[in-house]
Every structure is written in C-alpha cells, then in structure tokens.
Image 1 (cartoon, rainbow, N blue to C red):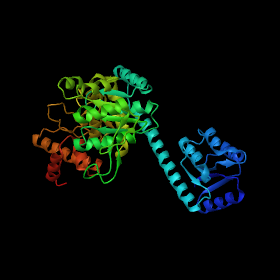
Image 2 (image 1 turned 90 degrees about the vertical axis):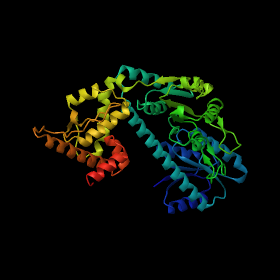
Image 3 (image 1 turned 120 degrees about the vertical axis):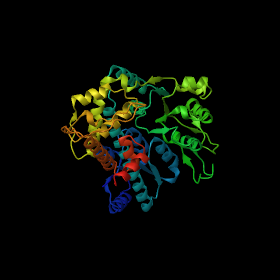
Image 4 (image 1 turned 90 degrees about the horizontal axis):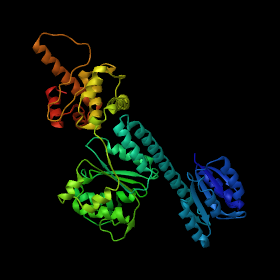
Length: 456
C-alpha cells in the first residue's frame, strides 16, 4: 500500500481528501503545516507528497527545494491556486511529478496519484535492474591477466571523465560490449539509460530512424512520431556496435550529434538537444577505411578521442580458466545436475587452444561441455573445440572408458553420442532449433537433418 503525505492547512479540505484517498486504497498521513511535514519526513519516506504551496508557516516551494535530496524517491504533486501557476511550473522544473489547481477534483487527484505510483514503481524496477546488471558486470569482467587489467584500469579512468566519445577496438567476441557497459556503470551517467545498437544488424533504411527517431508521416510506415536512440538515452550512453558498418550518409549526421549535441528526427524540422556519451565498437581498421574513402575522416577523428584496444583472449591466458568457471556458475541453473569445474586435463586443453572466437567462443564451448558431460568435473572429451578452417572435433561421452576392439561398435557409439548431443541441445534450448544449433556448432539446416535422421 502506497504511503501519501498530505500537507494542507485547511482542516476540512485535508479531512475530505484524506478520507477519499483512504477509500481509494492508500495510506494517508495529514500535516497542517510545514513543521508537521518536516517531523513526518524525519521518520518516514512517503511514496507521494501532496503539497499545498501556500501554508501558514512558509512557502511550499521553498520546503520542496530544501528537502529535494530527501524526496528523490518520492513523487511530488503540488496544489496551487489558479493565480500561482507560475510557482507550479517552478516546482515542475525542480522535479515535481505534476500539479493541480484548487479546488482539487478528487477523482482527477486519484488518477494522478495512480500514475505517479506506477511510474515510481517502474523507475525502481529499472534501478534494481541497473544495480543487478552492474553486479553482473563486475562478475563478468574478469581481469586476472596483466594485459586486460591495464585495459580495465584505463577504462575506469576514462569512465569517470567527461570524454564524450570513446572508441573500443578489438577482435570479434573479445569483450568490447562488456567493457562498454562497465564504462557506463562507472560513469557519472550510470543513473541514465545505456542503449546498445548494432549498426550491422539493422537495415540501412531503418537505421537512421532507429538512431534519430522520426515524425509522423516521415515515411510510409511512420504512423506516429517516435523518439530515437539518442533522445531515449539523453544524459546516458549510446553504444554503437560495429560502427564501421554505418553507411556514409548517416556518418555525417552522427558527427553533428557528437559535435553540436543536437539533431533532427527523420522528417522533422525542430532541432532537439541531446547529451549522450557515444562508445563506438569495431573489429575493423577504421584508419584504413578512411584511406579507402569508406569512412569519414572527420568522424574517425571525433570518435578516436580516446581509443582503447581490447586484447584477444589468446593474449590473456590468465583469464581463460576464471572466465570458464564464471560461465559454468552462470549456466548452472539450466541443468539438473551440478558441475564443480574442470579436470586438470580439460584445463590444459582450454589453455592450449587459440580461441579465434575469443570470450564468446569460450562461453559456447563451456555450455556445450555442460550438455555433454555426465560428471561433476568436466573432462577434455566434452570440450568441442573448432579451430578456424578445421572441422569440428567429434564430441565424446564423458565417463569411465569402455575398451572395445570392434571398429563397428566404436562407430555406433559415436552415433549414439551425436543423438544424445542433439537431444540435450534441444532440451537446453527449450526446443529452439536456432539456439540448439548454435550450442553444438552446426547450422540450423544441419540440426534439422539430424533431428530427422534420429526421428526426434
């Protein structure tokens, strides 16, 4: 039940509003003046503050201003006479949720409180999700190796600065997205949104609308106005993954946003001010693309204000086993049997592999191994490693070795393991064929062939 603090000096009005709000399902505490309101705030945190601006012992707006930090998690609704609307506007600029003019319409007040409580609840959920994500990032960002520790330290310094654009370079799957989220979580912008956009995943004809938004009627399917990524992330961070894929025409508009902090929606004429930090990610050589005329030189220099290169996993050997154990713990909830870790032989195999797919590949290898392994300690036979240009190793069943001199029996066992691998992948993915195919390192068509082959 939401707690409301009603500050109103007129006794009859205070009583009437209190009774009406209680019938609407709220817990209400009344205060006849600012002194009583101050006493209540000393021991309680209301969900909603209903504040009259004209009170016998002071001006409600001054009270709100002096208690603003304390009321950060409270929705403030001011009540004012028609002639005091300018004061209500000042309250809105301070952060008030809304205002009502007296005499107060009780039904309108209830609806307004409902909206304010719902919005505050949503904001709290977002904050909880943000804090949870930050905890996940701290667990995910493994930096045991000197090479990556140095990168994380530099990222922490730039995160707390006012640098408006950061360029993260590195191979695909090396952890650039995770580092970008880590930078946002450490920055002064962390309470504002972080929005990630893949410049390669969105069709060229839709990417401009995705980033800048559009006005109603800007194109055939624009049935209503829509805010874009930069507007939605105002005050926060925009992560542009695969920035090298941004079409040349849109690069000029991105440059304007970065340099002038203003933009126009597609089909719009109004200039909109935006304040975002852009973190651009790429595994391409942008300087070479500039020389070839495929990337704007001015945009490259604007993005390259603070470049950070994320080293590939093969140069971070000390991170491999801690990352593998992190993924093992994170994925544990998907499996009915417990996993304790990896055998020494499996660890040596992980350390001896080149990891062309970097951290992303390591995660997939761990997940596949958990599907295959029947033992609490995952052995080397469950590690399906696929070096670039070479066929995937045939997965083998974990468990006590069973010697056999019959060649045909060995082939039969491999088929059994393949069937079991497909079955486990389907269970682990919730019968999602695309995800199951990713888990065992085949295409969806290859998986469907096996499903048909085994009658699954």
